[in-house]
Image 1 (tube, rainbow, N blue to C red):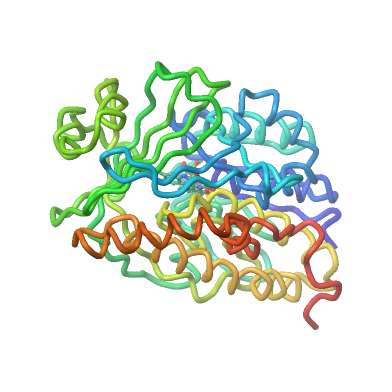
Image 2: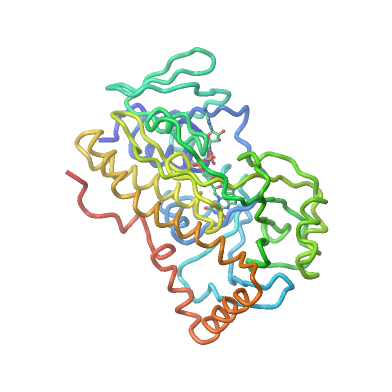
Length: 395
Ligand SMILES: Cc1cc2nc3c(=O)[nH]c(=O)nc-3n(C[C@H](O)[C@H](O)[C@H](O)COP(=O)(O)OP(=O)(O)OC[C@H]3O[C@@H](n4cnc5c(N)ncnc54)[C@H](O)[C@@H]3O)c2cc1C
């Protein structure tokens, strides 16, 4: 039933642009409204795991991803904060599944091109002030203009206006973790591995980007100080370097190259109770923001986009399609979020003997049964939303 539907999407992020292409390819008349003056992204990396790649492939964009300078990952290395190896996993064992590191700006650009090529209109400087549900959904823009559509989908991120309209105000809570992100030149010949240096109450993730020209850094520290939940807040690189001063030479060498850094507070949000109304729906971070400890937020938005397209296309009525979409996606999103939340303490054990014990178990597991270590994520990475959705929609 997608063909001919007039659909407005709020937000030209990863979720909004992917959904726009999904729905336009199925015959909908799609417009994306973005508040920003241009489709630009922050200079940072994203990991695209096999379950996200499956969606890009089904959308005909996997070639564009490879051509964008995305790095094909082959190894995950967990290290102690001093640099001693704890666990090394060979991702090529997952073959044919592939795992990529991509620059966010490159992913956004290829999704925007893909959306436009499918006939989507992307309109900039369109800040949505409020939305109203009903037989026809309505948007009120900051300019005062009112727009109507058969369906409005909020892909407007963690501070979603559409989520508020469907669920009322929510109360996120500060997790006591602060994160920094930066990119540095790749001076170490890093080619295709992701490394996690795990210290007491802190960890540092690093991986190569842009065909290996740069290294992406995400550093997380437990902090009492409350920080704003914005990815755009500048910090002094000296603060980051000081926070990781007792880390080993390898980690410190990367941090020493940081010239510009952003810092923000990590908040937990409840998964939205209502993902849709009569003609309003939510997707991506707007429905289920996650902590970045499993690198799945953008990938979940891609999976959502595909699932919404299939659910709507198969349905006889819009409400039925939206109900199926929520049914298909909610439990998986919750599982991902709970797993990501659980990862934080695993990285951050601060009591020495406990850390030693946990690392020993990981070492042993990696040495004795490396495939089992990889297989524990089969439910996540081995899932292909483009082939694994139930055959029948909800009635
Ligand atoms: C440090 C960090 C590392 C991460 N690493 C990974 C990773 O490796 N892999 C992964 O899969 N995920 C990762 N994520 C998560 C991922 O970035 C997010 O989950 C993803 O960007 C969500 O996409 P989205 O489209 O739902 O929302 P967003 O990307 O937030 O896009 C929302 C869009 O809506 C627009 N908008 C908002 N409000 C309005 C309005 N009122 N009117 C009009 N437009 C509006 C915004 O300007 C924006 O363009 C990471 C996140 C962080 C913070």
